[in-house]
Length: 163
Image (tube, rainbow, N blue to C red; front, side, top):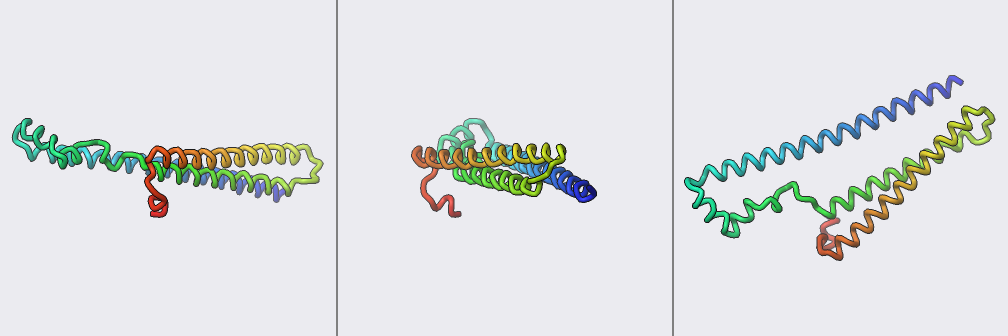
């Protein structure tokens, strides 16, 4: 009985720790995107200060160099299809293995007759199945996105994924 309490405590602490880690990652990503946007706004403001009149700026913006500096599609915030594919597949593989771990962990409860252990086993099998299904779905979605992006010319070559 004491081993079950310790196990549940460890699982609870690990779950809370994992949730905190995911929240920290999301917060960090948000902060980085805000920082990049602020740097770009500051850069554009400094660029505007270089011109005395609006006509000079318009003349500069019409040049190829000016378009490349002013065009938002050249910013660091534009999405990279290869990175999106890789992230989707990474999350899918992680989810798949969490599901497998839950299914393997359920085997320790095989042969139990206590209704609480039976319910725990059913609960872990359910979440294991969800994790495996979600992982397979994300891996397939990543592969489909890769094929479509490759056909549309968004991913030029395999060397983009190798970098």
